[in-house]
Amino acid sequence: MRACVATTVHHPEDARIMHRQIRALLDAGHEVTYVAPFTYFNVTPAMGLTAVDVARSASYGKSRAALRRGVRGADLLIVHDHRLLHALPYRRPPVVWDMREAVTPRQLARAERRHRVITSAVVPEATLVSPSPPPPGDTRIVHIGRLSVERGVNELIGLAERLVPHGIRLDLMGAADREVRPLLRDAQRVGLLDWFGYVPNRHALRMAEGALAGLSLADTTVREAPTKIVDYMGRGLPVITTPQGAALVEKAGCGLVVPLDIDAVLNAVLDLKEDPVRRVRLGAQGHAEARLHHHWPDHAAAFVRLAESWAGQSATHALAV
Image 1: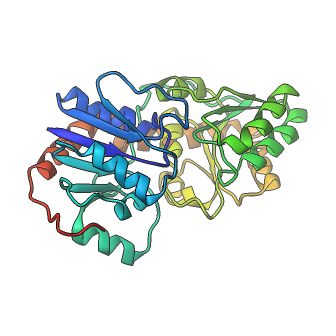
Image 2: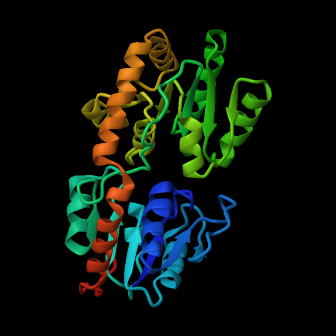
Image 3: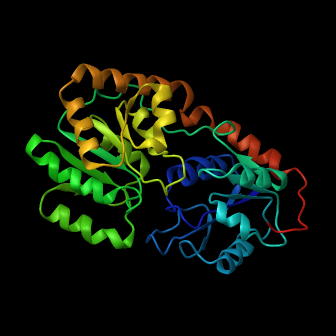
């Protein structure tokens, strides 16, 4: 099977896309063409796949041109951002939309009439769950994933400054949008935090182990599911999240839900610092839930079988969405 996987908004090394879905397809012997913003994020495409570079959040015309190149000879197209459904080329294989963002019921129904849709019920949010992570400590907190204004970078920097008197350090592991990189460099220069830039997911997960908590902060404009929460759970970390991650955190009983407010996040961090029994309990509950339901090796083969079955089905190519 030849699969084309496409995104114009995610980092090309996004764990769910590159290190889970694409890697599972490659390991199963399939060919993959990857349409992604490689130049924007200064990423060299991985060995073993065919790369098509596209501008981040490219116009519909440029996105369609990139997809047209990507689907040549392909048996399946998997897209990872909703806007690409509006840029599909006329001639294309069956389309699968990995629905990682919140959409209206009307948008979902329209997509399901024309394409296959991956939801968390079809392919669960997953990670590489550590068999026995160390218990949460009390000297640092971590954030894994993209850094941007809408993902709370200003609040993260403000929080780091407020944590200094309490002996707690903030570690940031993730690529940053261009407009916030100077802010992060300045904060690191004066010793408020450690920003490691993009770190491969496997390494980032190991670096996160033993932290007091993992942070998932986002404003109301961020609509995709916070995949980093599952990463934290898989490493036995309590989670501090804004409401976007409330459903998963509350179901697992693995953390605290707070508004996107420096004082609220600070209080949550300090509460966990002062209560080691609670943070160990929250970390253990999240880890148990992740091992039971979110360990990627338990889902990889099923994902590949789904992709193979979708590629073998006929699709209606008459209209582009």
